[in-house]
Amino acid sequence: MSTTSTPTRARAAFQAHPIRSATEQLATRSLAEKLAIARLELGERMFAANIDDGQSGEGITALNQAIPRAASQAELQRLSAERDRLLIRLADAALANEAPLPGADVEYARVRQLLAAQGSNQGND
Image 1 (cartoon, rainbow, N blue to C red):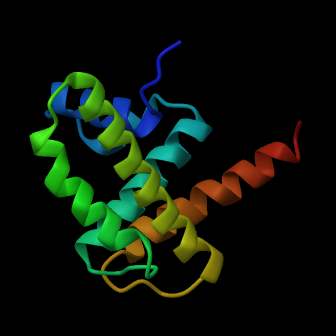
Image 2 (tube, rainbow, N blue to C red; image 1 turned 90 degrees about the horizontal axis):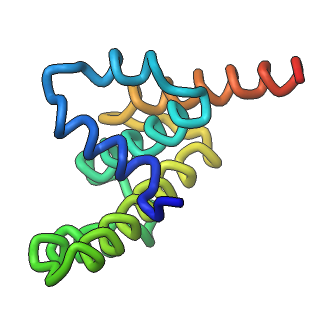
């Protein structure tokens, strides 16, 4: 079993095939994978827009500085997975507050849409 996180694999797949749009890639993924990717993208957008939960931003910044200096592939994977975890934590904090996110509203709406779809699918089980 691979220890690479789904968002990390998704990022690697996108970098391997940059011609394919994110929308095209999402069309072939399961709802759970789409939601994981969307949460990561929301966290990325929030970080880029300087929207922070008061805890995650500083850690993400530190990891952004450490990742290029990773001494091994294992260290790179560990740092990248930790960065992804913090980005998702940042996104989840916004989702818990249901607050408007200027600069990340499109990504926020996408996650909400996927969460609603997941909820309706669970009702059909």
